Length: 187
Image (cartoon, rainbow, N blue to C red):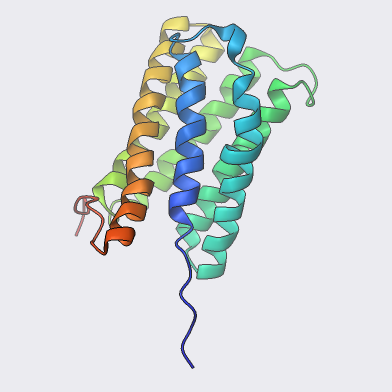
């Protein structure tokens, strides 16, 4: 008996992460008015949150610990963002949000070490993401809008690289080629 071919859940998780991150980062960078920031909430619930949680579960089922931990954690991050932004978690200070962002930055920094033997595209996604979290976290704690804007721009760059990482795999599979993701940092 042959095993049924299964889809790779990583492009779904990366795309959900990238699109939601791109939209929120556009607000953080100051490119869009903060009045429209509520548009991120639906994305945080479904595409950034639920889609990544599903991708994480599918990575677990495939035996990919890194993909499972990454997608499930960032899916949970977007669910936290949604609940916090909607006020379900009670009163939250900018310092509290900054602490959570820095904690996610620490998590991402540790996960980044796990990308050193992966492809360059994934390496850059995690590198840019931990920098994004630290900029946003420190900016939130200190009330420094310049750091928050820098974190927004870094988030946009993170989203672009994450989207490339995921969608290049979809395109490569559809045309029967290997995805051009760059060589591993460490061989």
